[in-house]
Picture 1 (spheres, rainbow, N blue to C red):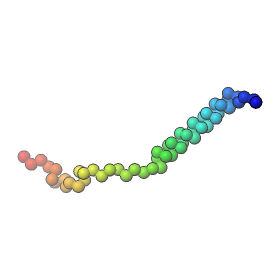
Picture 2: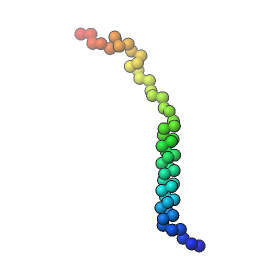
Picture 3: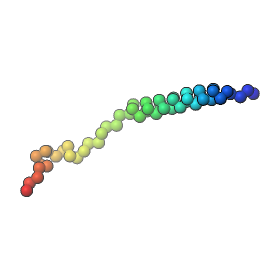
Length: 52
């Protein structure tokens, strides 16, 4: 059985690495996570002033 040429191994490595990278990037950016609602939004800005 003939062996694969080294340049063919390099081409396959670059191809599968780029496919894995694109798949990971697409999975990262395609999912939208809603930002958590902070508790400070429920307070009015007047109640946060200092009262000496």
